Length: 496
Image (cartoon, rainbow, N blue to C red; front, side, top):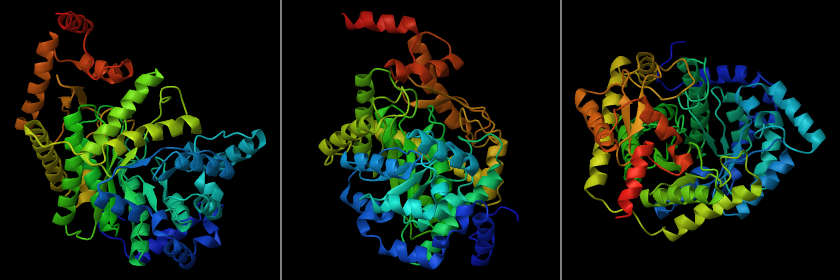
């Protein structure tokens, strides 16, 4: 079957579903019966429905808080989530383990067994497929706020079946954002097809009066990703989801570092996603935004890491993001304990609470940045539709193949990986090497001029070294990776 951006017929969906449910023994669970699943989902109170709570938050102009977290065993996972809930989390995650992300359920099963023997989690997340519908139901029944699966799975079809049947009303990911940054060999055509199934499943529930949220993964590789690339992929995944019947969509963006550029990006993500959905006839979708705290290297010092978390929280609230994904002060050390995860939540919650009635004022720089982002996204979207002969699914596959759309530092061999980002003299993310990106000369000139301003200030040539310096800068307590001589000169200037 040729990949197309066309809503699956119910017959095709049900035919593929038989295959999906046969991939692991939990797929034969009688609780996956649609009648039972629909009844359970409809019985959920509004405050445990992810989609409904997001709508309420956006209307109230509040930024909700959600951490990342997940361990191997059900009771320990419930204990973890309750600790985070008590710390103030508005939404709860279940971060899925790496074996499940790769559909390696036998190894996940072994991880559960050994975790039980040693009484500690030996998996880096919650193996929802192995625990099945009943296990996932138990988790939901023992928390008080909505649950979302967060993972990174190119083929998460069985996972989606299980979590939704259990009453979890949100699932993160998409055929692009859960492939290109996570996998090496899986084709985009395959992963988009898998996620069409997942979105059609959500559309099926929507047809039966059940609101379920879908959230493309906005940060991508999380390494100084140019905003227009992140926004374009988020918009494409929103459109692909809407075609399959999804009506509640959260599009995301990862903190870049420059306050004005980040605020512009969040606001344009909301505006442009709504614009393209309506432009293509999807008039019944409700769009929210999620801001991810810094996804790159964190400072090792706990106080400095807390400062970075606070900065992200300030930007999220001033930008009007509906939700924020938090980090912890021990981010550079490893997987956080529930106690340190709770500190990250409280830190974030305090900042957004103080700023809850404030928004960043419009000004010339903000308007200019928003206009530039809009121009770049429109250019990429036009090229995607052009190479796909107006079919979005075919267009995005072809666009990646040609390098018209590209993601820096991605492991996938299905992206050209030719573009290089770097910061300008104010810390905004610009493009140093365009590869084959679908930009005209005017857009390219804008980026070159911005980088030339920095190069002149630092008295060095524009080069890949800028990119390298910028990647490490934040973990060293700076936003821009300045050369050593520049830092010494700056220190001398501050003395006089």
